[in-house]
Image 1: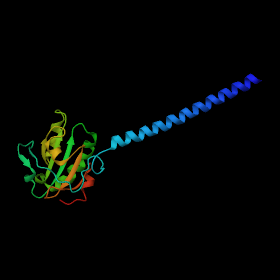
Image 2 (image 1 turned 60 degrees about the horizontal axis):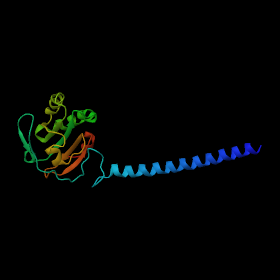
Image 3 (image 1 turned 180 degrees about the vertical axis):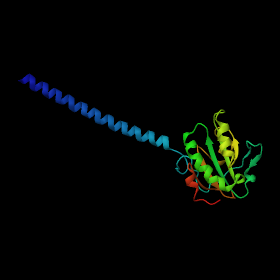
Image 4 (image 1 turned 120 degrees about the vertical axis):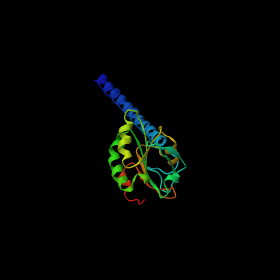
Length: 181
């Protein structure tokens, strides 16, 4: 009977030791998760959702050639503009493209600039869709216009006033509907 009692006590001690180790491990994992979350989400400036630019941001100077061969720059849009940034590899871009097209169509091509990049085989289709409502510029990822505007995610859509300040932006055309151009 003494051996059985000793065995039960030993198993109980081992179970308590295992429980303490497990609780310590859980605490350590939580601490590391918090540190990693802070590192991943640490961005200078205001915390915004991807595809959103801070209102009031002034767009920098840029110059580019459209797919039609026209030269465009900030000076090309004297009364403000609607800007859209899209990529052929971005599923969200494909989902949000119809909303952007519907928003931009009544404004006229002279007030809308679309910037695209992506796979060479898919670019013609995207350019054809956007060319109906916008002047289209093809540039590499993080190209000159994207840098001038401050775009860091695709899709990004923005309404820019005549002073080239962002009045509204987002990754959905619905976020632009409240802004007047």
